[in-house]
Length: 244
Image (cartoon, rainbow, N blue to C red; front, side, top):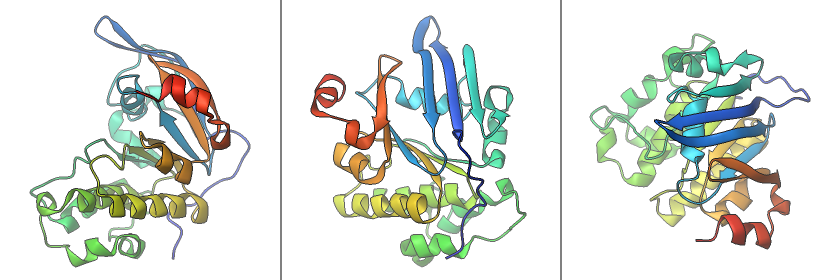
């Protein structure tokens, strides 16, 4: 299988966020947030509902404005980059709820990502169908006619078509049947550990997070309250910040 990107390996993080603040109107949603996403690793953002996880991802993607702070992605100032530039910079994004184009075919959904590639490739890479065989069987089917699990595979495939260096996944297991959750877990592990893709994901399911992630970051009320290697996510932290 071909590698999906050409990576540089260094000592500093691929994504470094410092003192990030964001507001919804008068509501202060992210508070002086500091987060690092090491290159070649899988980092999981965790926390109860409404603590700012999706808001943070949308700030990274330029979909929400930030009030202050910095976001450095591989030497590029993301705060100054337009939302339309993120894919071209090598950031693949799978939003919560998948957001595929329901009236377009599977093939058309995948083709949409090609203009963002930096290498000029204008065909869907073969490895997409190796990762997701079901997509090759349904190229002519409309995206909206796929099951939830198949749509999630399509959304991940669409992000990978852009040839990302960083893949961002927002709750990839939400509303997905257990067997497809297991498949997605294996694909994330393969992309990260065999193919070297840096991954940042939001995930609520602790077993899935433990299985695929190297590092964790806990958010609470818009603040980064803890982080480290996955084996350091102990029962005390789980009870304090994850248990409903």
